[in-house]
Image 1 (cartoon, helix red, strand yellow):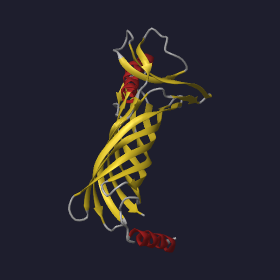
Image 2: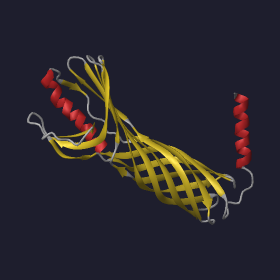
Image 3: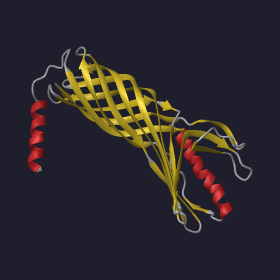
Image 4: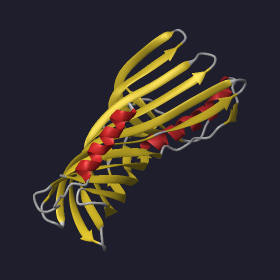
Length: 281
């Protein structure tokens, strides 16, 4: 295994340090990864409502609230790559994709010994078309500006587990798609005419509704599931304050306690900090 790994490294270095022009008509591969932040939108507001709802309702069935607060879903990672065609020494056009996600778990406990864990996990894979502008910044350095649009294949997973006594599991898997926009600025360090390293900050605007999928419920007695659409609403009951809520329903809400309901909008808008490499052919 060590010999194979060493040989692969030598091959990569050999091609990376071959002479290359970077002129018009050349092609390069851009690979990156880093930390990601996204807003979440209705997903965060609705999951916060889950905590508000059960903190208010569990005492009515004999389980007073003990500990735990909602943890917003914002942080995760992204990684991806682009194939860039060099129009000139200053301009390029790229086609690429990436995977971005965020996830965070909330834990709450209720008397006497009920433990509840749940999380939201928004993720997306966009197919992106981007324009690049290269600005020389001294010997072996370039400032890179890029912007473009992408078609996003988005997913929203919401998962809840209550234990004991019933070992109740509640899992929503849903998906939607739509167009988003992105841009960024970075600094590239040219190690050779074939290989560069870069650091960049990138932002995106991408917010989608129309999430459809399946809810699966399991407990000690068995399991069941249904298909539906992800909805968001504000609910009002006489024994608690107003709260926001998100859930996958098989039809439009009809309960009089559902106010201002609409299809949930999951907001992937945010930013990423990345490290990456560019290999030129």
